[in-house]
Length: 359
Image (cartoon, rainbow, N blue to C red):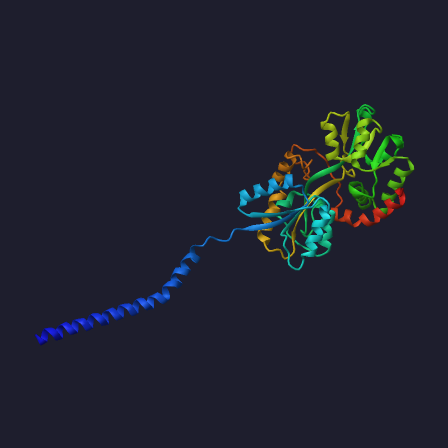
């Protein structure tokens, strides 16, 4: 009986020891288990969504659609900042400069080129030579890749077809200072502002300051009508107040599409000629931006010929800047002067325009 009791006691002690060991092992395992549990979700956690912040001076009705398609194609989320109508492009460029120490913007899609070059001169951009830009003429891209131009609109002479037969239409910008037309039969906007100011700088860059100034002095001497804006020159050509109004293709297309008795004429299109001013959009990458790889993807996307065609189809662009491009838009041979050279002449040309055309 005592032996049975001893055996029972031994079995009880063995059970207690075994249980204690089991509990000890569980306790030890319990201290490690949360680490394993925590590490597992980290291994399976999806990668952070790719994203990009784009500032744009392009009207939201157009750019928003492009951003949505870019997101769908690439999976890159676009955080868009649109211009405020009261500030326009200047507001966005000032915002980029103010954020220079801690950039928020990755890419700036601009509807012109002057403010883009301002950012370059301020050291706010970083270069990227896109392979997609290989067929873009050198006149429309920075030599070091700080910005690239694409698409856009053009300057045009809007001719009243009831006042001028087709054989009498001008073919060169120099026709405006010839005896071919009375000065008062021509209207241009004040060349101190807008695209007429840009055109003055482009002529200065192409011809040199002396010849450029001489051209505009001849415009003034001949009594060409100087009016308040491109839309006014368009209206004057439509109504027959003038035979020729110098304007932009976006204004001119409105008149043509409305069935007005007018036609667009692009100047100096012959081989070796001066060419016609095109005012493009530009895109650039902000220095030290947070998402440089995504920024490059967007640049490649937006400057492509396919995107020029897309924006022409949306009636935002009027033409491609690529020579002989197979597009539905207008076909215009642009000036060969680089946009940077045009920018460099803005101050000189503007001072002369103020002197020549001061009211």
